[in-house]
Amino acid sequence: MYFRIALSILALFTSLIATQAWAGAKEKVFFDSVSGVWRGPGKIVAGKYKGTKFVCNLKGGPSVEQASGVALDGHCRVGVFSQKMSAIINLKGGKYSGRFLDGAAGEGLDITSGKVRGNKITVGINRRKLDGAMVAHLEEPDTMNITVSVKVQNQMIPVIGMTLTRESKVGSNR
Image (cartoon, rainbow, N blue to C red; front, side):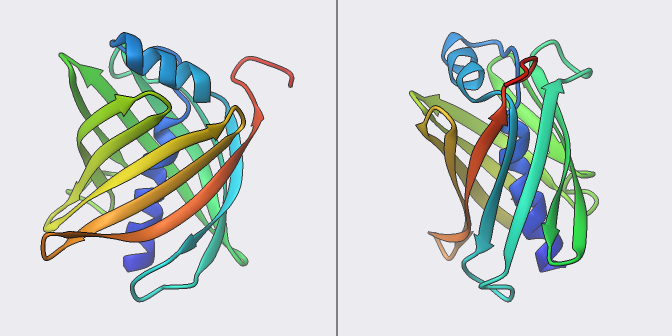
């Protein structure tokens, strides 16, 4: 259960990095700079599965639910086990919304907020009583660092860290 939630949180990040057009100018600039096909390792750094390493392969495109959004499909692998990842994130009326896997009503997560500042995005996430945030930071043109934290007694505790490398840009043969 916790591993699935951790992978759902990871899906949150991956769905954010593959968009082509969002409503706001700063969002569009950020997402244009990180769109593409990404691959990379990560590690669960807290909780029951602390120390678990994984590798993700992800590809995204425009959301069919909204004119401003993204849909993602891919998978993350832990040893011989693979977990499908899917996400839909939309920006409408200046508000972020979306779901990972089947959303918080099922086995996934809901997106509750978002904000872009330069080469960094912070997104609020929720699953029942679990609140948290994902921060994605474009360190270099083809390197993205991601931290996912959850709120425990009014303190944000990092639970997932990873670094993704861009393998190609959307629509390119790079």
